[in-house]
Length: 584
Image (cartoon, rainbow, N blue to C red; front, top):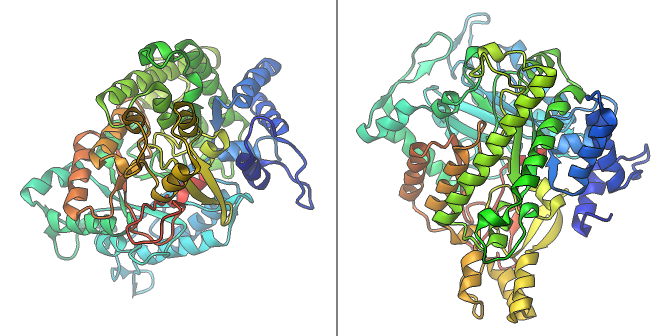
């Protein structure tokens, strides 16, 4: 299919291309992109002009929107957004209404986030029945079971995020919820903490449990360090729960007049208000690199083309809001009033390789600041230009932009881009290279072998390529312990396992400083990492202004999405993804 490689074509055929009633594919990749461009441009007065602009941007793979837009645009009742947050009331009727709504969203390819902090704790009284409450955990399991029954728009299983506040009396039960591997496969879980909790760790401040039903203290208080230790040990054990810094999230809330946010989408990069959605899309960074490898990165990036594409991509994502089919009126009302979009990036690690910049370096941080700052400024400028033409978002008087022109309440997000990156044949989001040759399991167990083409090209050009070398790299995952590779090549072709957790966090933090939503990133640890090292990393992420953190200790789960051929021993260089690679 022309622009896509063989693996991408298989993904397109199973997940994205239109099929007839018998399940036979009835469009090719070019027709798919045309379908998307036409459907989204229908929101424009100059429809044919924007059809052409959108088609050019997509067919070049310089930009791709989130999966529901690619799969559903142009279909009857095409639901195009990836990220949703739904409220969870403290009542049986309300809880099961939310389960029903989440199932209908999953059916269209969306992912849902929930805050369960408002549900009364286990064994609390229920006055209407005279019985006692079960607490939030059994309801989370009910949500998970409902998700099992729904396949996302024919694409894959549903994806959810469960958030619980650290002061909820059932927080320990929540922290241990995924202790047994395989439990709650349709959920990521995260603990919500605030600055008071994090700053109190140094003084071992007391944590008061609060009953959300009446706002009163409930049960026995504990020390902040005891709670933090339990949270960190769970993360050390298998990567969950994650942690969300909601004071950081709400300090950056562009709509403070609508109240605080208390939940995120499944991968944590999109905090949202109740019923809000956000449409995401990512720029393919390596395609903006040219010139001589000896030149400064500023001269090798095509800033002019990048700005032009940012302007078109912001317009595309804004039009998705109007082209979208809304599953429920509450979702349409707040989404169209706030018009949140999230323009991000993919192929960041590949871009660094092209530029000859090591991932874990001050030079990389400098590049991130300039590049993401440019994207953020350009996206805001594009949003203002659309506002001059079409008007500002409806709730602007409740936002930080009151008195200004702005089309969208937010414009930037860093998503994981798992599937999109495979379509574009680039590295995921802002992650380092996972490996130079590895296996990825997608499509209901189908496995793909992923080889870093740039490394293979470099090895051949420099004369050190061999089949034995590639076999050894496929077994080990990185260049560590591999002989015959020049030092300057080792310096650039680093993988997740070669990079210290501190550098992972520093990269995330610099991106976050130029993103008005949040950042999806995994902080990788070696198998022999200690609980104390993970604890220090959480604290560093909070101090550097991150909005949340996902960690993964190598080999701490048996089930792996990504693996190397030598992954046969405990502690081998395996990795996993949170369940929500499925919505991007």
